[in-house]
Image 1 (cartoon, rainbow, N blue to C red):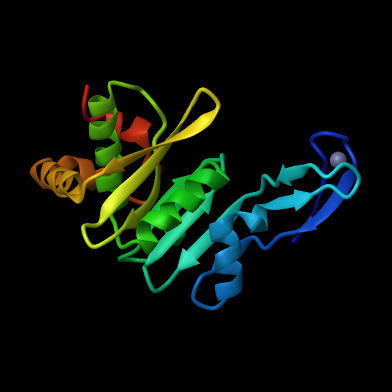
Image 2: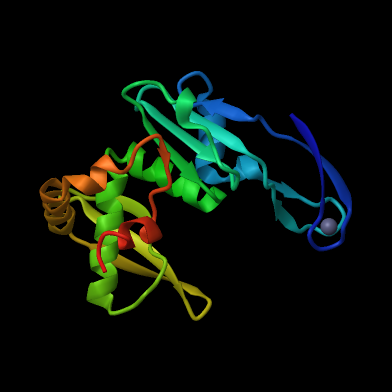
Length: 193
Ligand SMILES: [Zn+2]
């Protein structure tokens, strides 16, 4: 769908053609552009500024039974098929993080619990982002901004397993993640004061 936007730096108008939705199974090349964020950016031909497009967007991965809706507006979850995980995200960064979590075979509720625990360990209230899971021991890497730079923090998979146990013992947390839930640190903090 072509949309007209303007450069955040010089104001030059630009018409961007961005799909309203991507099906990860039928469009693997678009899936990669979503994952890299390239689908949502355009470079101004006048001043070279890389601009981020702000458009409602649906990401559908039938293999993972995953539906991610990117929008600030209230959404109706009726379109989420039975057996699917539905999530609402509010930024491209949040969308990419969710895809990375699910593509790694991880559970985003457990990841948010890991962030909660890790913040406590760090004694910092920082917006942690899942980056990757690596190696034979499945060590996870999270990132957070500090003094204008991204700090990386390694979290052992034992933390993920511990957090999975906490969620099993507190089923109300998972039960509240229905429809197109927004699962982030603010959501998780509601359960642990
Ligand atoms: Zn420009």
